[in-house]
Amino acid sequence: MTKSNDFILEVKDLKKYFPVKKGAFRKTKKSVKAVDGVSFSIRRGETFGLVGESGSGKTTTGRLLLRAIEPTEGSIIYHLDKEYDLLSLDKNAMKEFRKRAQMIFQDPYSSLNPRMTVRDIIAEPLICAQDFDRKTITERVKSIAAKCQLNIEHLRRYPHAFSGGQRQRIGIARALVLMPDFVVCDEPVSALDVSIQAQILNLLKDFQEELGLTYLFIAHDLSVVEHTCDRIGVMYLGRLVELAETESLFYKPLHPYTEALMSAIPAANPDEVMRPVLLEGEIPSPINQPSGCSFHPRCRYAEELCKHERPEWREIEEGRFVACHYAEKLSLLGVDSYMNVNV
Ligand SMILES: Nc1ncnc2c1ncn2[C@@H]1O[C@H](COP(=O)(O)OP(=O)(O)OP(=O)(O)O)[C@@H](O)[C@H]1O
Ligand SMILES: [Mg+2]
Image 1: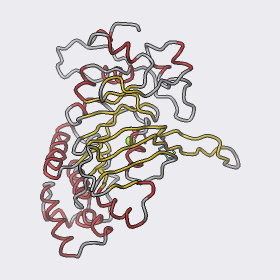
Image 2: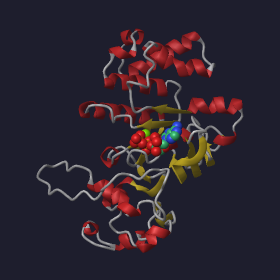
Image 3: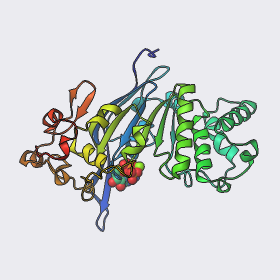
Image 4: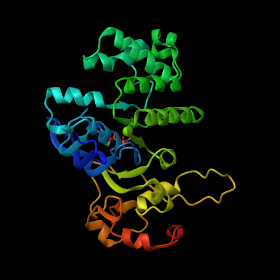
């Protein structure tokens, strides 16, 4: 038993390159570096946020952690009822692992099979696990559906009869029916109305407290993660650029990309003075990544060095990791002064 370990999951130098086929003979020429060497650990019972613009590699990272896709390189170690070295598990160990780690998807419309009843959708993970008799399956489905505030009559219906919020409750019931330890929540509220978002976030929080769950929570803007996550990793073009406790990150971002993402959060109070949005242009293609620091073409602090040398991923304060040549300099500046200075 490794329950004493503080971390439920340790990821080292994880990479996923998708080959891109081009030309008349569809020869593999280049690859999309969707995830390009990320390392982080997730603490038992915490909500770890992963943020970044569209295409930064968040979903790919989440899928790699569940071995829904095979990595190109790297290691993923879980400390659950025992240690699982995810990339070298035999068939039986993989079956065990599947019961302990699940995923909640972004789009509650496309992630539920329209030809299955709600009961069958929620029961599917139990049936796949092959460890449960009919009676147990029925009981478990009813119990988790009730906890997700779905009525018994709902179980006989098909997903099209439900609203987005209710569909996401079905998705959550399916992910939690096996009582997992770890859940990847891939933008679970992005497709929902703001009024419904809070209900779903509260439901996830209640389950976390009741079951001691650990979440990887993926989002593409910082406003959702501020109140849901204990720690946050910021991704840009397949790499982590900053990782910190939520409070420290919001108090003072140390990577110019985090700072730019933060400037894009709309002010909650309409009387507040609008801050300038510091993020311009589009995220570059992950096939032809910029040289040096991949953020340099959009960075307002970029110097010559940034064009040629990739910054090292390093711990600059306890538990705080940054990949920027000038992170130490930025950390010495006063809070908010970063909005006006040039390094
Ligand atoms: N199966 C695939 N084959 C080829 N390229 C892929 C595949 N899956 C993802 N990619 C590419 O990898 C990069 C990262 O994609 P990913 O879906 O992980 O990003 P994301 O951060 O989740 O974005 P979003 O916020 O839009 O969901 C993108 O450029 C995407 O086009
Ligand atoms: Mg995604």
